[in-house]
Image (tube, rainbow, N blue to C red; front, side, top):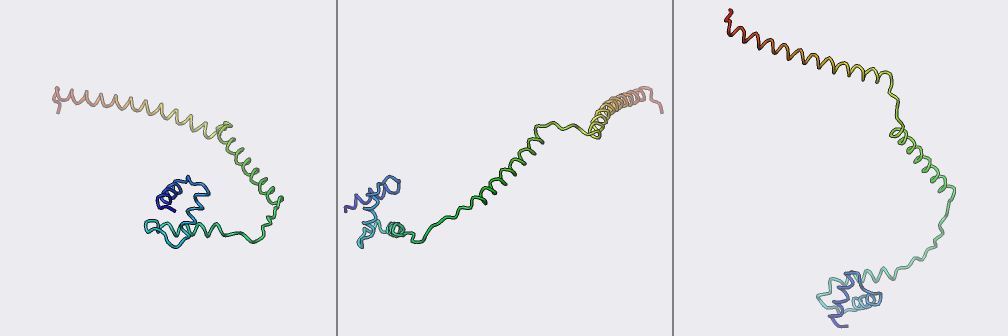
Length: 143
């Protein structure tokens, strides 16, 4: 076989575009003793592929189908998934009624915000009075 043809087949093989006949040609080329030195690094790969193709399964294969175990596992998996689904749905879509403690806490929080606003207003008034007193003392010079 020509060296150019082998290079062409190898390039196509590495691209995944060869036919079965071309792969057989490459296998035959790499199984012969005299191979071009530039292609020598491909030889272990193609000999391994050839050995794998020759391997055959000689044992017996009798799969045992246990339908009861499979159906029980499937039923258990479906039941568990449905329970989880119902729980998630209940937690996300069904509105929860707040407890009396939560209602009381929200009312307390609202009233505390109102108290804080009034205290802040009073603090601003005290600051204004302090400034007024300092200015008055500066001009009256009371000792």
